[in-house]
Image (cartoon, rainbow, N blue to C red; front, top):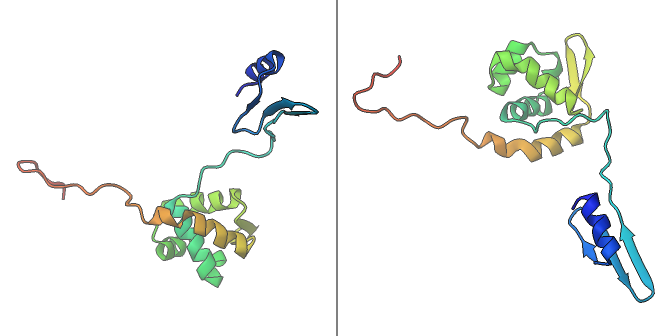
Length: 144
């Protein structure tokens, strides 16, 4: 509920409780007036959730000790993702503070427990098909 509506309800003496945690309850001998304010921080950008490619690359870093020194070609092969997406995917894991960059071409897991937890949250994305299979239609040429 918005602040203006909550103020109007308070003014009218109407008791309320909303899902955001705001409350106005008044009774004999008590008054409960809670006004929730969402904490906004300028340095906390909104991050997109981890994708299937993120989950696959994270699994490589969790499984293979030498993943932090592998080339993009090798990481793509181990993770089963496109070579062109390895850099972007790795940087996305860095932005989530799962991986950290040590040197120009070296990365490592910041916290293995966090990596395992985040993999546990996103592994179902691996089960979803990337796109629906196409069914050949009669009379239409198929691409080679």
